[in-house]
Image (spheres, rainbow, N blue to C red):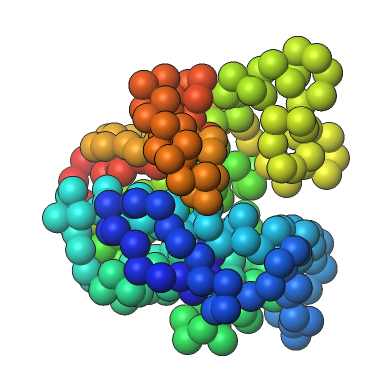
Length: 276
C-alpha cells in the first residue's frame, strides 16, 4: 500500500519519498469511484473511508518500506521476478516498488476508490471483497509470489484468506505476509495508563478501530502453523519512521534484538509445508 518513490535498495533500505510524485501533505484525497456491484456500500464504503483518512506521506513511506523488505525476503528465496499478486493492494504504492524490481504485478482490493487509483497507475486490480468472494480468480490462476502487507488484521477470518492465498501459488512459490505487532512495549505502557491510542496513529480498540484481529509475533506464528505454512525467514520493522535516518537504523536494530517488545511489525516469508 504506497506511491511513487526514488529507487531504494531491494533488501529493504530506508525508502525516500519523492513529494513531487507522491502527492500532497495530509490525508489522501481519494477520488469518487463508480459503484462496483454489491461492494458500493458496507465494507467497501468503510474501506474507502479508511484510505481517505490515511496520512499520505506516512502511509507511502511505510508501504514502500514494507515492499522493500518483502523484495529482500523474496530475493533470499531466489525469487526476483515472475507473477506477483498483492492482496489488499490499496492505491498501488507497494505495487510500484514490485514493478520497478521486475515483477509482473496484479492486485486485489476491496476499496473501489483505492483500486481506481492503482488502475490509473497502470495496474490490473480487481475490486473484490476477500471476506465473501475469495480472491476472485479462476482455479487455475497461479503466482510465483503472493503478498499481503498489513492486510490480515483487517479481516474477520485471516486463516481462510491465507489458505486462499496459498492455493494460488505456483510450485515453489512463496508468500510474504506483514502483520503488526499490537503489543509492543510503548503500546503496553499506553494501555497501562489508560491511553492505548497514544502509542500509535490509529484508534486502538472500539467500534472504529480498523483492525479486527490483533497479532503479536507469537500469535502470527500460531496462524501460520494453523495454515500449514513453514516460516523461512522474517524481517522486523522498528517503530521509528524512515525520515528519522540514523534513529531509524537503531530502531530496526532494537526490533531485531527484541521483536516482541520493540518491533512495529514483522514480515514473514512462508511456503506450504506440503510442496505444491
